[in-house]
Image 1 (cartoon, rainbow, N blue to C red):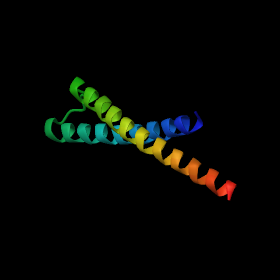
Image 2 (image 1 turned 90 degrees about the vertical axis):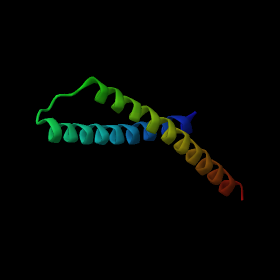
Image 3 (image 1 turned 45 degrees about the horizontal axis):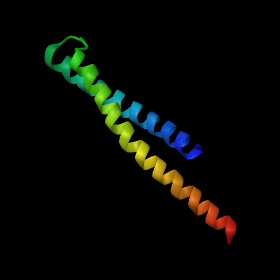
Length: 79
């Protein structure tokens, strides 16, 4: 259970940072084009979708890395 929690935390932080950066970039482009700082609803949905996709990919990757790290630690302790 611990590798899943560790992977979930790391994936959540990575996804949140990437989603916030993407949202900031979208708002910067919107400000450049329109000259106002309005947050259209599609941008929020796009930020949530970006977070969800990155979270899923990072969670799978981090869980795999944590399990691999745990197995290598266990094999080192048995030798």
